Length: 71
Image 1 (tube, rainbow, N blue to C red):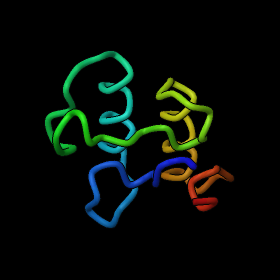
Image 2: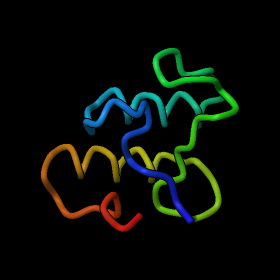
Image 3: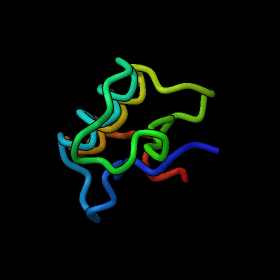
Image 4: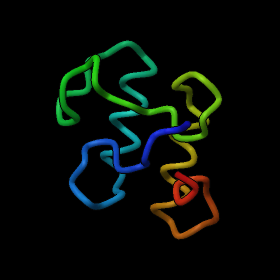
């Protein structure tokens, strides 16, 4: 099962959620997203956090069709 697109759990999907997912992908501890080991950013449920997850978060933020509402 994938993660919610609201990575920082502030009840809004914003660019900062994409930043959190991208930082996790790069191996950087996301500053505003909670504890590193607890950051769930696999929003497309493919088994890993990748730039594709970041894209899905941005698509949701821009009002485009995304996987963000599937979970």
